[in-house]
Structure formats: structure tokens, C-alpha cells
Length: 152
Image (cartoon, rainbow, N blue to C red; front, top):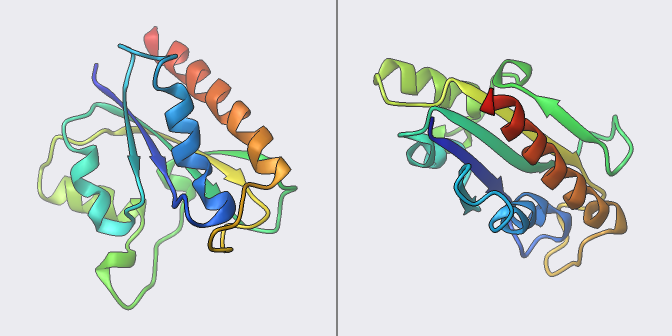
């Protein structure tokens, strides 16, 4: 089964880089088990990245304020709400899944999302917070654990 590990974020925005940095850290460790892709895209622009895979793991930062920084949220697309925005560019994963079904695309229906609660995903040129740096190691561990589960 073809598996995608997609690291999302923006390396220019402080803690927002955690998804990309975790994906990068996994590159050599999971060689042959999954394809690793790094992206700063969002919304429907991500659609093409998922096509052709049977399973996907998405790594990203999140700032809810409801969890301590460093907490990793283990989510599925069903856990995410609809995005109400002025443009399709801002569509979320649920909208992307609906569109993929409608277009009958070869799209992963097993999707796991690991989102790291961060301190500062907004500061341009800011470095990673201590909690984000520690969280990257845990993101890496979670991905390897999920790949083992999917192996069976």
C-alpha cells in the first residue's frame, strides 16, 4: 500500500514549521515505508499531493489554546469541522475529501493527522519554541508507531 507522510507548515513562521521539520527528520528513518512530502500549501491546493496514495499521515502545527503547548492531537478528518471561508482556497480536509470522492480520484481514505499544539505559529523569522522542538521528536515517534500499526 502506498503511504504518504505530509509535513505541513511554513519555515518562516516560528512554530508553524513543526510539520515540515518532523517530515524532514523522518526522511532517512522510514525510507521505503512511506513517501515524505513537505509543503507550505493549504486548502484545495493540497489535493494533488494526496492523489495516488492509499493512506496518509499529516503533520502540522495547531494553536487552539485548549491544550498545553507540546501536546500532540491525534485526529481524523471527521474530527475537523467544515471550513466557512470566503474562498475555496481556505477549504479544509473534509471539503477536500468530499471533492476527491465527487471527482472519483484515487485518494487515501485512511488519513491520520498529528497536530502539535504550539506556542507561536505567527512570528515571521521567529525560531522554534522549546515545546515545539521537543514536540518534533514526539511527532516522529507517532509517525513511526502509526506506520507499524498499518503494517499489519
